Image 1 (tube, helix red, strand yellow):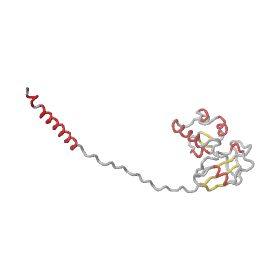
Image 2 (tube, one colour; image 1 turned 120 degrees about the vertical axis):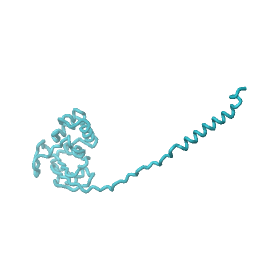
Image 3 (cartoon, one colour; image 1 turned 135 degrees about the horizontal axis):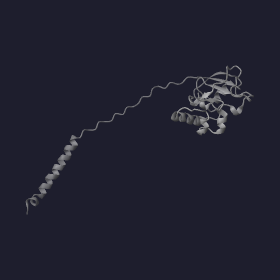
Image 4 (cartoon, helix red, strand yellow; image 1 turned 180 degrees about the horizontal axis):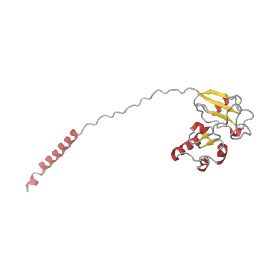
Length: 190
């Protein structure tokens, strides 16, 4: 019987003890994890936006500047002006669901009126909407354009740069042909 076989049991116990001691040393030397500090964001107080002023003119009963609330729609502005007048071209009434913004003009066209018109009491034609700089609310005010389409137009110009021609709205399938025909005299790409 050789020496290794004779002391085999004690050698195994010694090796096991060394492995166990090494494991204990590793566990004790490992740094204790630090608790995670998660910052809790504080919300600044939100200011309630004040009333907005909107100029409503064209084929409405009482054209004037009206004070409305943030979130109000074109329909609210037209109602504040007494509704549309009998000579209104109802096929070209601005998008009634469009949200209003402070300083916006809501113009209701009259029957037979063409682009470049000058309404009584208004100096010059209404401003064309620049599709390269218009806000969502301004685009929403165009007939046939709603929040989804205005958002697609804004996303397209942000991603691809400014439009070079108004016809790109139709070519890029951002609006259909009939909507383009309704808005082409109201928009520009200055």
